[in-house]
Image (cartoon, rainbow, N blue to C red; front, side, top):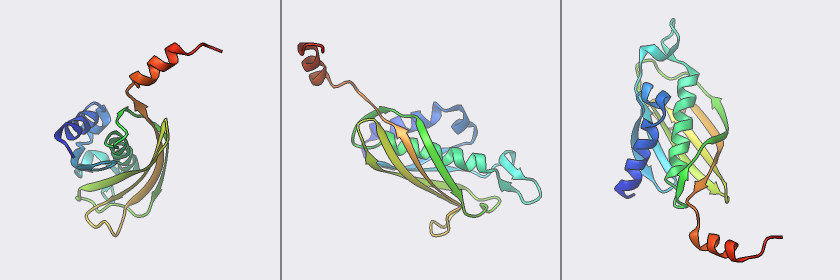
Length: 155
């Protein structure tokens, strides 16, 4: 993966205020896949008695990771937004542990990218949550096609 895509992914994360507030960090980036982590922070605890991180923070991590996976796909996305994200929470994350999400963009159409993601607290074989989602796929204008369209009569 080239450094430009990694820098673009870091900028993508930094541009989302909630991602910055949660302390998300890009760990890895491949063509169509991303790994982003989030440190444990007592401010994001959903249940003070157990110290478990709130599910909203986990969902934000998985959503951001899914968007980064779309942005890194070889189709050359220049923008994305979440259309739909379904999350299954499997167990609470261990209090004090960093949460790591991995998302993979597994299918792309002209305007929609489909993503699968998991989140864990150190053991990928024991996920905290799993998600599937659909994201918009904004691409750079195709200048050759634009020229052809301009030459064709309108109907």
